[in-house]
Image (tube, rainbow, N blue to C red; front, top):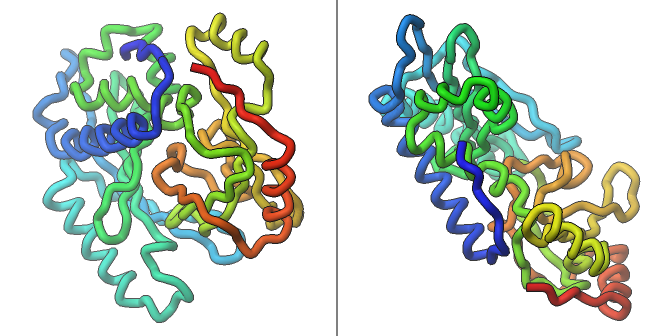
Length: 293
């Protein structure tokens, strides 16, 4: 895996990376049987698994219906046909749900790779019920540990797989991104199908001070940026802090995104949440942004 050095990036550059990750996954899922290099003297297993994920109306948590007995060698045609057929059945039962079914369900395609006697999840790609790829999440934790001990195993990977693993952390936690929101901005986030849509109030770039920024520049080689915002906890009915750049285990009480949802944000003038409206006004009058380049 390549060490991808970090410099400041814009939202446009992040969205471009998200698009490239999706393209890499789509290409890899149809070509890995031909492009993966097999190890000599052992039987390697690479395959795609399929899991249907759905949101519970009560608490926004997800259950899954894994088709563990079904493994596929390519995305097209058989896995795609299976996904399309099952999706159509769910969409036909729209009358069972109070909101569009595509806002509650999504597919997770899991790429498995066997190296010697162990099977790893290499990456996961989320698809909507209508066949649109939503995200790609690379499993960097296992592979960083594996390649540190056995660097020669990287020769098994395709170029697309290397790209996904090299950039997975950047996509999940883009802590070098510069966002142009102003403190006190009210943001609407369309979390579907990973969770219910919700509002947040942007607090401004970083809750830290200038000394913190200078320390991160020295420590990491770039300004490590934080983008805290406030949301209303449904469980506690009070304001809590989260981050637009995904460096929280859960984005809200129950919503966990497979990437930083920066492609899902709209700035709005107001919302029907008095707590957020009051917080927005206070932040606008008391906060300031650090102007760092």
